[in-house]
Length: 433
Ligand code: CTP
Image (tube, rainbow, N blue to C red; front, side, top):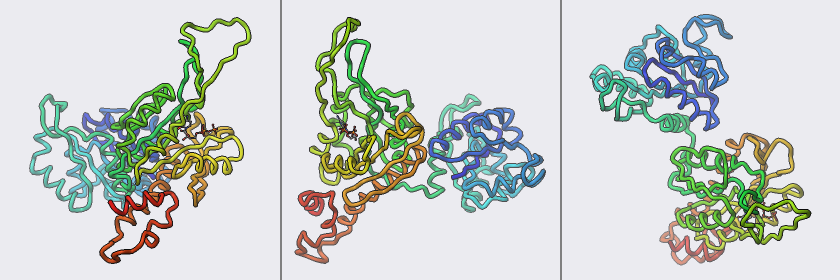
């Protein structure tokens, strides 16, 4: 999706850089246009470096269409136009149809949804002229992301602070009809690799970076889920407002997952958990004295432990890192572990998977197999969640089932009958609930 960010001239203009980043984290292609006064607060260079697109500041640039008509190409390019910060002046221009600079001209020329995030001194915000202009815009379908209250640049405290960039980005996603289909869900997702100590300085680990698990956390959160992210050591920043539990060993990950899984409605185990740990951890750094044999003991299978303790309606999705016979091994893992689905990764392919920004996968349930070709991990996260949402459907159909309309209908004829991933006992519990 393509987002045009308009920056007008207020002190909050620097926060537009954070907005650009927040939109990019949602896999949006972002371009920026600025008013001349915005360029006094922040340089166009900042935005062109962030977006990899030139930044327009006037109507008179030479572009593909030629000088004086470039606003038309910007306004047709965008799937959404968001102005942040929107000053009282730009709001007034939008409300009254002025078109004497680039942003207000684009506003008149675009068919895309328009959002404005005002930021100004509280007296200017409260002035009837500003409020009337905002009402005119609201009536025309412009979405207004209300400013926050707090300390303002002029030193006073009051309403007028630009809304949080994450909130603005979410409003853009909503305006684009990006589904909020995980609202009410709590996702527990594991990420990264674990480390098993050999001595005080060495460990057994793997190449997992955590990127896939973090992308799942971010995608689920933007679709309305509350997210608990349990991660092995990783250099990545968690998405804002996501609860991050950092762990190091497989045992610590097991404890964190089992402790928090009761809160979750969905559990996705994207972590590359160590299968073995040294039976003995040397108290001092091991010296090189010749050949060394290390005895390893198997770690507990966290996914299997989760499946054992799951409650009805709780979805459990595993990952399978495979280097050969992906489908066959994935299918065997799905059955062995008792998960609702397995995401199979071909970790032997060059350039994708471990530590890469892109990945490809097969989403396997007991009855379906969905190929997901190479794409960024953030996009793949959304594709995986699309499939997870599909797994939810039977439970919703159960909720829709009206027993009074068919009293005494036997279990055999209930709508969950054909859902293979619910045991007969689970079906009955859901129906009874
Ligand atoms: N997993 C787990 N606990 C472990 C090992 C793996 O919970 N001790 C989970 C992973 O998070 C993943 C799934 O099991 O969701 C499959 O992991 P993978 O490494 O592909 O398979 P293993 O079960 O380790 O089997 P193998 O190494 O023999 O292929």
